Image 1 (cartoon, rainbow, N blue to C red):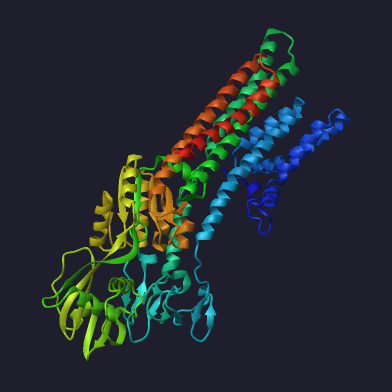
Image 2: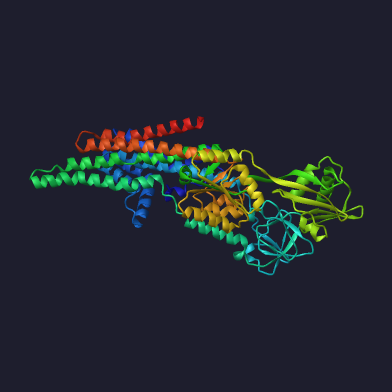
Length: 635
């Protein structure tokens, strides 16, 4: 339930002790409470006019923001909302001289708003702690560090190993360079770019410093196009109306109509029947109905329920940015998953080594590790780790070439890389039937063997997918930029229904948008920059917080902070539990209020019954919420 008057209070108070910051956060409510208590305590010792003035003073801190929000809604043509009902109830309480009740109505509301915003802000702060920082300046030859918006096409930019390329351009130099493009394409393997190749912004050089001639301005770069997709998806994604807003949209006009009829019908009956009409009696009953109908129990218990539920989800490894996103989890029926970084670790391991006749597996590993020892390539690191403890031959002239590495061993050329590298040097090797990544080794023009590596599956993802199916997730599909063989192997391992491979960011976004357009309620889980548009377009977008990119986390509705997908199962269960708690609270509050309103309309209920139906039921629903959700924590 977004409320403009709370936004200014939801910023962290840096530098203050935690308790003092909490006091500052609730300063309006605490001021109102102190003045309210003072007015009630001094009632016997001060003039009545002064006491009323104190009650008015207590009403102003929580009341003025509600008035501002009410006017904002009225200007948009939305008259029937919780703000209108609370202002009418507070005015009614003052009209029948029940001043404490009038103040309490708005005070409860303000506390409830702050609780909900505190939960959302806590999630935002924790997400920001997880975010990395993209470089805001780019090194331009002849100009130094420059903001990317000010770099012109044709200029040459420089990126060091591990530094993200900020603009699209053409690779310069005489040697190929390996780039990590996983954040952009989702492909787990680094890509070799030869001189003259187009390098997209967002790519990261792995093995050496690179020079790139800028081909497009920042506004037209690959990264900018992805950002535009994210903004378009977020704008097209309808904002979920809060549960309280949906309830008060019909509850408010019903209550106002009932209070009006309670006064008008007896007046008309008396007028038609020629009898005297006791206006003060029926006005008092109508105002009592308004006081009784105030949605304090709803205003406090609903945000409190979601506040506690967001905390529960956070403790289980998933941070929700809003109550609406958590609430949407309960009805999602379609799960779309990225592969690299989501289902797999992105860290390769040696699966097998196949030596040529007359060669040994140890020899193949040793030769590959010798050539790869100076490379930062993930495949090279995996091979070096596998060959740890094995004596390596002395090599010289090690350099990075397209599709692999080359070196000199005993005067003979040593090649370690893909089949394309061997073919370029006159060696043709029969293809292997496997989804694993192949690294071939050749020495002196002879084929030595091949090493097969695979991306490792994250622990427990298969079990988590099975558990999500049991919660009602009817369809599970993998969307990836990887090769069909690699994606198919992972889809089979985790039990997915279908998969799509070789996808670009806009392909993923289109798949998610089409599913949502067909009425499916989609959860999308991803970690890369290429996943950001899909995260924004999904019903609930969930980013990987450990190793995920900042754009993905900013675009998502929630962030996974624990490894694996198990927190998704907890999120679905928590979402359904909190909705059940809220349904109980709403039913109890409206049921008791309706009973007291009926009794009040016929004169069988006093104002104390109305106070119980409002404040008393509020306390009961708060207690029920905390008990139910605390029981949920134990399970």
